[in-house]
Amino acid sequence: MPELDLAVRGGTVVTASETRLADVGIAGGRISALGEVGEARAELDASGLFVLPGVVDAHTHLDAQALPGAPRTADDFESGTIAAACGGVTTVVDYARQHPGRSLAEAAQDWCARAEGKAVIDYGGRDRLLRRQSGRRAERRGRWLSQL
Image (cartoon, rainbow, N blue to C red):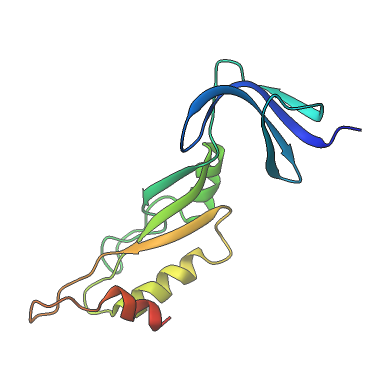
């Protein structure tokens, strides 16, 4: 019986250090072999295609509002991450907006609540710091994270 669950054969494999023609062997949901791989329970022909380990989309706006009370973007964390996964994206870095009059901690908590239980891939957030009336940054990122 083959050790591999899946062999992706004949594709151009793109890694952090190189691009080359190779097969990819997958066992237990993880890449276990690269190069010439053995028999597998299932095979995919990737001839003429790029084989990527996963793409990071570092700029998304999921379930976002420009202003409080304004309409939200079309995709929430569920539909947006499903669409991303269908395109080979394994991680999104979403925009966690801090609206005027709200603390960075409140913005982070709101963003986490909108994402929790809906995302089907890995996700992270990034923030936009608003200025106080005095002109200083509202809160520093380290302080924001310590309040969560």
